[in-house]
Every structure is written in structure tokens, then in C-alpha cells.
Length: 245
Image (cartoon, rainbow, N blue to C red; front, side):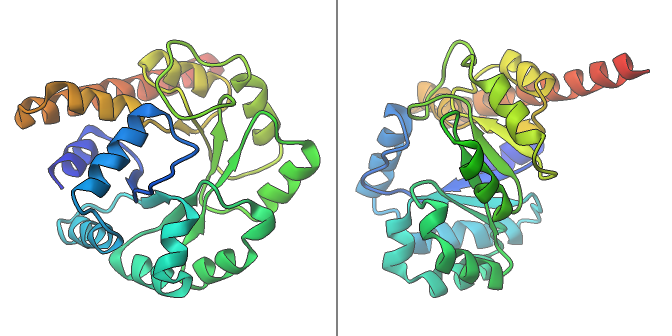
């Protein structure tokens, strides 16, 4: 809860809560290890819902997105999970291994409880499939900057710019660029290429873990990094507005 509060105070626009899964095939070593630690210490779906409720009770009103894999939702029960998530204050679901061709039932249940279904688009996504993905999306579109798994990278992949152009020209939904985001320069590059924002996970986890067991220093390090990323967002938007005038 303290970490979420620090991120909110630092200016993040959306908070992603990860629901751990034992086989996180879309994630790299950092998030895999984080999920393994969480599961080994007894983290559960109920505890994630409890965190969401605590976030709302604390007065934080930033949108909450649950990122997970399909199996935990299926095991909990799709109807029950969506109902409980909505009641806890969750706004959207990012189910990274559920292809849109197989998600009609889940989409309908989520929508009936007012939950957005966040879609992912990869550089390999064909134009025909892109149209189908966008037609069933809500909330925002998650643009996967490069093939592979999550993890901080030194530079944005060359595929990021053309991917953002393909998506933004076809949808009015906000598009957020993820996978490899780890530095303010990535924020500036993503916004210049047409993204409405960025998604960052692995570098936040690395930043926090590097300071442990000094929890106070870990929280400060994450807040400082988030502020730097937010400053890059604001700076790029101001520069863009100045250029237009």
C-alpha cells in the first residue's frame, strides 16, 4: 500500500496490480522472480482484491488495472472474479495470454461489470488482426514495443515507432507503449512517436529490490524514479505544444 501511495503521489496516471501466476510466459526474469516470491509467500487473488479495496479506502482514485494470466481468473471463476474486482474498485483487466479469438465470454462478463478489457498489439500483429483487436478493445491499447518478454532495455526497439503509427492511425483510444521502458528518454521517444503514455514494470521492481532490506530507501528510490519519468512526460508534452504554436 505504501508503494502504491508513493507512485500515486509521484504522478503515475494508472496503477497496474499484478496477480501472480506460476507460468508467466510473457514476462522476463525480473517479473518472473517477483511472481515467484509473491506466490511462495502466500499471495492470492483474495489478497489482491483486498489491496484494491484498501487503495480505494485510502482515497486514491487513480484507475486500477489488474495484470494477470487467464488461469487465475478461470480458477476463481470468471463471473465471480469480475464481480469481485469491480466491487473492489478495479477498472480494467490485462490478461496477457488470452487471445481475442478466445475471449468473447470473458469480455462479455467483464463488460457487464464495467471493466475495461485492455488489448495488446505486437509488432507482428497483421493488419487484419489489428482491426479485430481494436474493435473489441476498451480503456487503452497496450502496444508491445518488441517481440519477446518484459524487461528493461537500454534503447527502444526500432519496431516501436512504426507500431505506434499503425495503431494510432486506426483507433481513438489512448495507446500506451510497454516492454523495455526504463528511462526518461524512452518516455520522450514514445510520446514523440504518438503514444499517450508508457507502461513500466521491470525497472520499478529492480529499483525497489536493489535497496532492500532498507524498505524506506527502496520506497524513496521508486518514488524518485517515477517522478523522473513523469517529468519527462510533462516536458515532452510542453515541448510538443510549444512546437505547434
